[in-house]
Length: 328
Image (tube, rainbow, N blue to C red; front, top):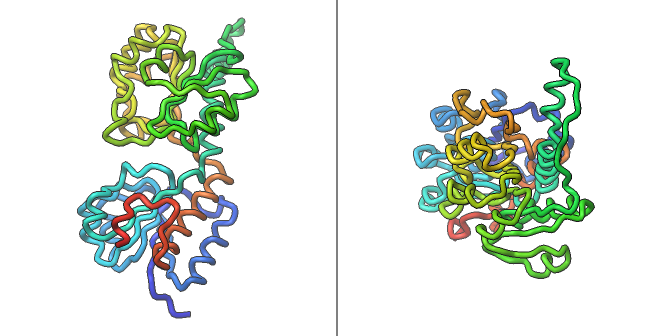
């Protein structure tokens, strides 16, 4: 078979663990793409990307930061297809200037992220990680936690993930508040969700989950001012992006017991710096940006990321297009 377009796939794990990966790969090759999977299975540096992207038509990317320098050096690049809903690691403006389409996979991993969000909320409320840790040290006693039932949940970002979180907690009979720039009134009415401002949400919520993208409008969305509005019993769960929460302000609020606890799957700097003071607190659950990592969910993400490449190559606007103007 004569291949005519190269696709580079960079993933930080062995693809064999993902059900259907090779089937998705075969479908790309049936479209006459030459698929190159980087076998280092880790996040590549800027220099490594530049070396690998020569002559590549599409880059299916996971955790790499795609800078303007990388885009300029990639002489044949036409598609940056991110595996995930966020695109803060891609210089979208530079990509647009160079005629490179940037795509994401909206909704593909909504279920795994929402599951993990609720799991962290329950673990935080019932002190599961703390109980496990103390029990292993022989400290066997009664540990009182907080019930989710009939509490108020504030969801910042009622998109695909936020909506799934709302559905998952419906059995707890929680009152649900939501903040989102784009309101789905029909959905809110169906699930008894009340839209409100960030200020009202943080004042009234017992639990707060975050599922908005990181951009100029959401960076440090929750800072010292907002933490001062929270109930002392409130708990924060962030499975979105680290930069949405001011980590210094969060540390001070947790240290001073102005809020009860936090569960963090994301940080401003990843891997998290071991000097980060949040790691010293007992009322924080630390996780490794793993909310979307299930075998089933990752398969859906990869399938959509590959399809986005095909759509661009066949002059169709992908479902996950970020910069539509780059297709002109």
